[in-house]
Image (tube, one colour):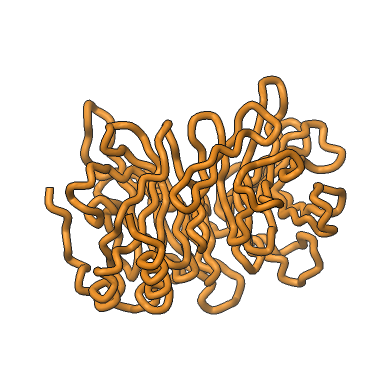
Length: 384
């Protein structure tokens, strides 16, 4: 495992130049086992704190240790995201109790979830079905998710603890509504408060969207939710540079979109289609501020009739199988890349050396940073 000094040098060097370099194509990563127990890492921040789910509960991993955070007053939970302040958001539920959105803040710095440190965000005031989900949180503590308005109708929201009282109060949610149909699912929010997601249109089709409080009035107004226009499309992530990642069609094809001309229209020439690792289906899960995207893809191979899926990283026009970028003798198979931070650290899940599902953290090898920045490892393949 990298020691703290080596890891700090690696992250700072990479952030300063490697991912920003137009020659960046691929790098050699060291893989760190975050933990087993059918674990999946879903979020990583710029301090290399990792969150996710193991078994029936959420976890925080930091400094080499996984801590079970429990279920925030419920029987089960799933953590989806973590911001640079270490705040974690996700969902929690119990049998017979509607699913709720939570946010946990480590108020006393103990690294464990204690009573009084989490809050349930809840649905909209007056909702006949008090169910909500939170999927993303930005550095300002703005949370993106959705809540039930009534049975069969859900609206997206952006929630902030505006009065800083550690509770979810009336007037703290921006109701995003829907793209015209019966549901809206925000999936990510960047540090500018711009939201990506998907929802049902008035015609009943699923379309990806981007929402921005363009007039800054703290509410969702006409023209602020941009329909990306692609059929059967889902926007799954947005970076701080405005790059949106998503997928469209059947089979799924991953794409990125960015409003290059600033006209708040989804122009056809602003989309980039990323391809797959050889299979029919691929999906992006996250994009960092440099526009580097990670996700999973079918490879075109099958094991006992089931399609094989691998995690990937996409940068400067090339999609790379992450299994080609880890030590050949690691014993790992990277199955999905779920998040990437601004320094290029990647988390997700795969099959570990013991043959069980584990969460992982990938960090670039310090010795490879010079080659990475110079593009010298673009064509490197893992030996099999």
